[in-house]
Length: 213
Image (cartoon, rainbow, N blue to C red; front, side, top):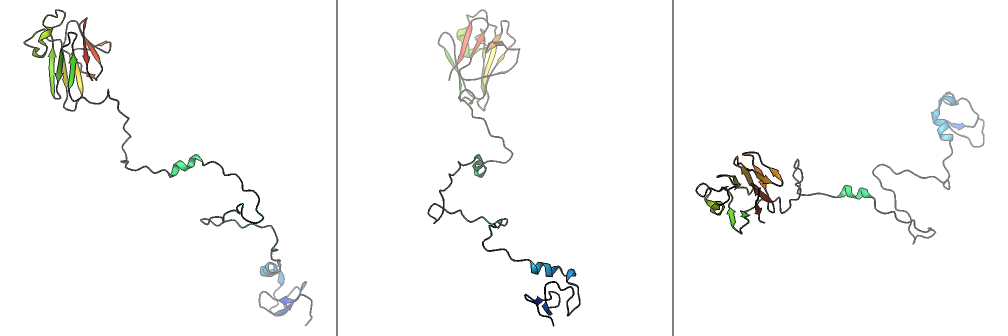
C-alpha cells in the first residue's frame, strides 16, 4: 500500500493508510466526499492562545472580574449607582388582596364621640351618639335650647342636629322660614348635611353656632 506523510484512517470503516488527496477508501470503497466526518476531522483545533470567550450558559453566573489585587489587573472600573429596579425586590406585607389603601384621615374627618355646639351667648349643648336635638324658638318643642326662645327670626322648629351611632354628625333644616346655612350654602328642607369639628352653621340671619373640637 502506498504510504504518505500524514496518513490517517478512514473515518467510516477505520481502514488505515488514508492520505490527503485520496478519493476512495481502500477498505470500504466509499468516496471520501460523502463522509462529512472526514472534513470535520480535518478541521484543526483552535489554538490555546486564540482570543476566544465562552458565553455563559443560562442560569450560570459569570465568574467575578479580577479585582485590583489580582496580578496584572488594571484599575477597577467605577461602580455605577444602584438602579431604581432595586425597588422591585421590596416586599410589602400585611396587605389584603383586593382592598384599596385607605387615605389618611385628618382630625376633621374622624368621627366624633359627642357633638358639642357653642351658641353666641356662650351656651354649650352636647349631643351624644345615637341622639338628635331640635333647634328653634319653641321651648316645649326644643327643650335642649330654651335660651333661643327670644329669637323671633327663628322658626318654632328651625333645624335638627344629630350624631349617628358611628360618630357621624349631621344637620337638617326643618322647613324653616329664614333658612339654615352650612359653609355658606342654604340647606334644602329635610336635606341632611354632614357636620365636622371646626364647622360653623347659621340659623336665620344672625345666629352662628360653632361645632367644637
